[in-house]
Amino acid sequence: MTSHVSGARSGAAVRSSERTGIGSGRLVFAAVLMIFGGLMMLFAGIAAIANDDVFVATRNYVYEFDLTGWGWIHLIVGVVITLAGAALFQGAVWARVVGVGLAGLAMLANFLWIPYAPFWAIVLIAINAFVIWALCTAPSPSER
Image (cartoon, rainbow, N blue to C red; front, side, top):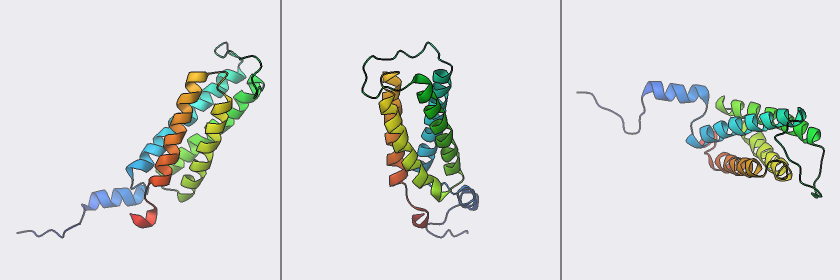
């Protein structure tokens, strides 16, 4: 008869989570949303740089900025957020801190982006709010 120690996990599951360093569903959630949101900002930036007819600028907006300038801002922020999201999959602790800061920066950039793509900017603001929540409430590596 085989006895099992209470609380023991299978060896494969323990080794897999220790190797990747993820250990929390919220971190996976945040990483996926960061990669998705970063790629969407990157694609919006490319479209804005190309002076695509997708965007319609509102007149007399307080935070008026050149569409090409916003395109470069979105492109750079999108690349950095995507890379930080990928680093979360590697279990990098710094990626959590950087992720919260970048998600806050992306929320601000998308707030200022509202005149050009109102619905999509609000969706990305909500995605970044979920990223901040997931990164702040996920257990720390010492708690796992």
